[in-house]
Amino acid sequence: MKCPICDYEGDFDEIKTYDQFNNNNELIRHKCTNCELIFGSEEMLKLPKEELSKQYVELYKNYSECDTTNIQVGIFNKCFSKPGKYLNIGSGKINLAKHLPNIDLYEYDPHIEKLHDKSINLIDEVIKIGPFDGIFTHNVIEHYQNPIDELIFHSSLLKNDGMIVHSTICYNYECVNTRFHLFFYLGKSTEYLANKAGLKLINLGKNYKGFIK
Image 1 (tube, helix red, strand yellow):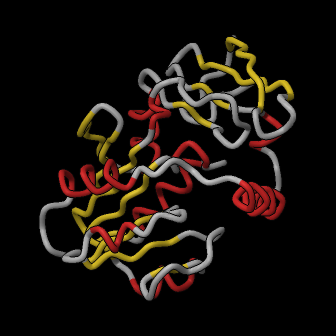
Image 2: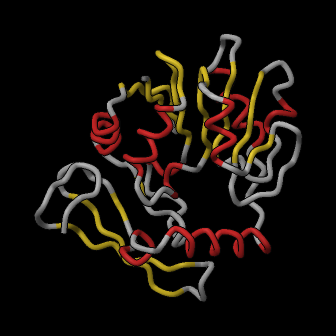
């Protein structure tokens, strides 16, 4: 086995839990003994993107996430203080732009219907609108099957010296009983992630980190 972030090959700790969205079926993840990344399950990491997308669509038919609007607004205002054009990736059903009326904020989510005139669900539209001064995500980075590739792509959407802020509780091993959480960024795993993506890492707060182009 090889760590998908730091490329370590060797012994990995096995961590078992269950999937609350799939009849409490067993979930098996692994922890890298080098960078401390926890990742898996292997089945979800290898799932074709089309199938994964279908599973998300089915999930959101019956499931609504907790309202984290106030948390997101607070983090956004702390991290992005200058005027500019911004992008919220994986925006979900929360209309963050409504609560940041003075910010030129676009919101992208391929799994959710458009909520307002700056909602986007096609990535080609995002590319046309960019580049952006900053990119924000909340509880999204743990869902990526290929986080290094995703960060490299995010970086391509940024202006020079732009920053990506990834906010997530999964910088700790929390909210673990779901197959949709593929990565938990413990230890030095975010440092490896930033380096692999060609970005500079800064710790902004307990559960949010910046990746600077």
